[in-house]
Length: 115
Image (cartoon, rainbow, N blue to C red; front, top):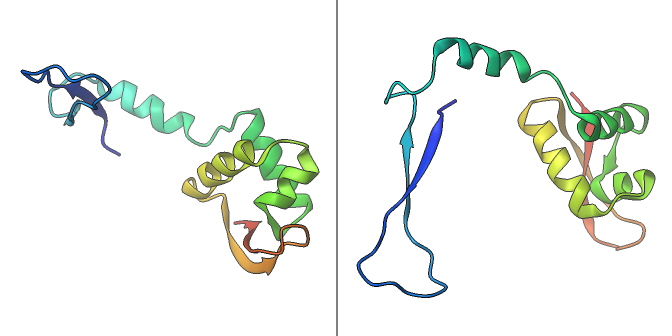
């Protein structure tokens, strides 16, 4: 996993409300990170915080839930649930199960199970 540091460049003309270009430079190549820090980072990956733990445990108890179902069960808004589920997917703890039609929104949604 690359360690990135952002650097913004100042443009000659200052424009209000315009984004400046951002370039990413690998900090590892610059020798800015010790190997022990990298090892500590990878040791911390398996640990989950409370929100991740809650949604992981909900998916253990209710396999095949969509993000909307998790939102209703946990009484959290959908914009809290979706990022946590995506982070669990990136860690490989949750995987796609099937599609279903949501009973309230009548839309096709993805369902998740614990990997």
